[in-house]
Amino acid sequence: MNSFALLEKLCNAHGMSGYEDEVRELISSEIEEFADSIKTDRMGNLIAVKKGDEKKVMLASHMDEIGFMVKHVEEKGFLRVTPIGGWFSQTILNQRVFVHTKDGKVTGVFGCKPPHIMKDEERKKVVKVEDMFVDVGAESKDEVEEMGIEIGSPVTMDRELSRLGKNRITGKAIDDRAGVAAVIEVFRESECDATLYAVFTVQEEVGLKGARTSAFSINPDIAIAVDVCVATDFPGVSVNQEINLGKGPAITVADASGRGIIAHRNVLNLLRDTAEKNKIPYQLEVGEGGTTDATAIHLTREGIPSGVVSIPARYIHTPVEVIDLKDYSNTVKLLIKSLERCEKYMKF
Image: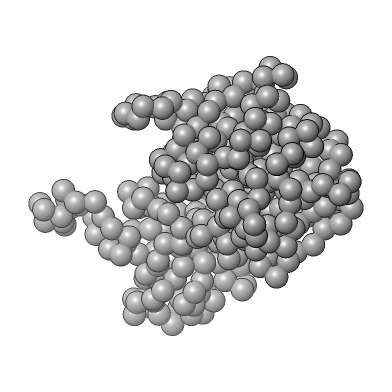
């Protein structure tokens, strides 16, 4: 299949945490003909099942993207918003956005006081989100209400996926629509003896919520979260571990300095052995910052052996995230080959 077309469709869709409906519908249309069953659970997770034997494998990727929510409308029609998910304020300013209403999308822009009229001390400070506003072109609070905008309206970035150089792409929500696309491709092509659950989770960016509830319901024998991780191969980065674009998917050994997940040995061995056997390039990740759905999954019930495969990404949690399509295709390949032999690693 055309991987770029699938990534483009998913990344250009809008689905802030808690408002993943548009993305869920797209995924369902891409995957339903390959599934023995497909359902949306009470939390909003989309769960597709391909039947096999009594063993159960769960692949999880999150549908949601970080965004904002309208919290106040000023008398002159400017919107004040609160972040939903982790933003670095310098990446927000002067971006174009969509405010989502029941009648459709309203275009807006992030603004703040311009430097021309700032005091000297103000120019030296980072502009905080609470000092920004969204301008939707309205002249009054009443006009904003006529647009259908209200307290609680979700806000997402207005940005479309683009090619960058020969093998790379850039856009919004690559975290984690790249993982979503990979799981779709794996689900379509996999030949797994075990029963395969492809789970597209909600609200990962605000607490791994969908992963927690879906894992409890499924209770898989093993689980693999498919996400992106922080690439460190650009100027100004001074970490001891390099994660490079173009050198293969990252297999997590531990993340969040062990406060997240320390990958189960069997799952880690499955992924590494498969990569080496099939000559698939890979990198090992020991992360100190963020975590993934696997953290919630592996602590469910009496514990679920879990691991993580990530696509290295630059500038995550911005509207210009960058990945290498070679890493994406090798992630798909690694997962397909791992599923073919995963039952050998289910002896705990």
